[in-house]
Image 1: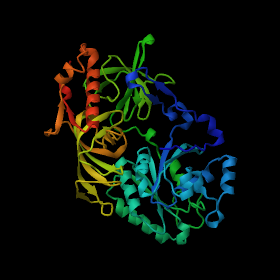
Image 2: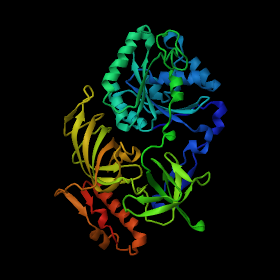
Image 3: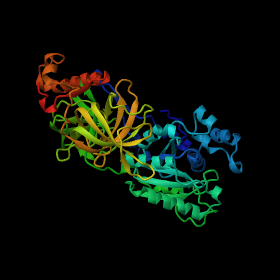
Image 4: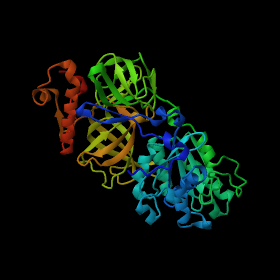
Length: 519
């Protein structure tokens, strides 16, 4: 994914510092954890992530380009470049060039990759995720949607709802985007007709009632001329609602809405032997935790109290959803990358079988004999079996039994895991209830999905599944691990690595139940 250069207002340019990072000294799990920018600079809090989506040629890049042009303090050289460039309808500059940064995009006049642009208004900071509309690049749209607080779903007022519009709406629902702004663009090409707008509004309401959207706001607009983008349209007096910018400024962001149970997927372990510090680093994906509260590792079921919550800018008494921190416990329980900390009264499921909804992203169709891995927030788990049960009909939103799927299909699937993993249902905890399927050999993204049901009981292993037992590992690879207190996490880590290697080699593998992992 390519991140395009950011057009920051000159008055804010110095405030947008690069995210701070803390790096582990454990070579086995070396990685970095970025501190949320809004937590470092208070003036940037309340940041809103906006996805633009819809069918190809509906005007997504032009709309956001016009918003940047009218509502932000672009640099003079950027304005001069756009003004000297080609002109479009009515002699207006081609505002899409502010978003379409790839050479191929400018040549073809379409968005291919996701473009990330930042801009500030007087009240808040925005991050725009401009996604492609062409079916070929649906995987890019799905990737961008997973980061969004709100989606702007564009529709060409001349053509109404298209199949790709329906697909994008279904993906928004799949990844948990709850607020949608339906923009009927190119109203100038339908003579600013209220009836044309109301028909699109009614059609979408009829189509989307089964989705879990909290709020759908419809706005008629003309991106090229700027009507109802950052300024109110004088040609559509029948519309009395907010402009696009006014509505965006009034929306809450995810950071300001901590929801669900406390979840802390461990990214890495930080050590400072001089100060006797061992911290579990990661980002709080749901709820909050305070110093003194008891937390539990979902897999080992071991608990400890929070002794300290550390950040690069000082210690905290409480860490909430969206904050990147290092948590020090009063007892060094053996947890490592992939573990999920929770509170004792609201734990994730130690899951072996998942029922899921997913969008197939790969150009290679589903293969029941394929080798897949399940990537959750910080964990990677071998998949012992993946079965497609049904496909979603984008016209009727009904599901029909199926045993195969291909690019851009939205499917219901059963997933059997080779070992237990700490997983929630998506409705309870979105961050730990979503996943990616990756190819075990190439590491390529295969599908993205959400968990509908998580079951602790293991699926019955068939005769083609190789069972990796504790005794087998203890006699061989793990024979050097003697001290139970210090070795349990390493025992599990090695077992998982062996399973990943076997799965990449095409061997269906299951690891003996975690309850049997004692040294």
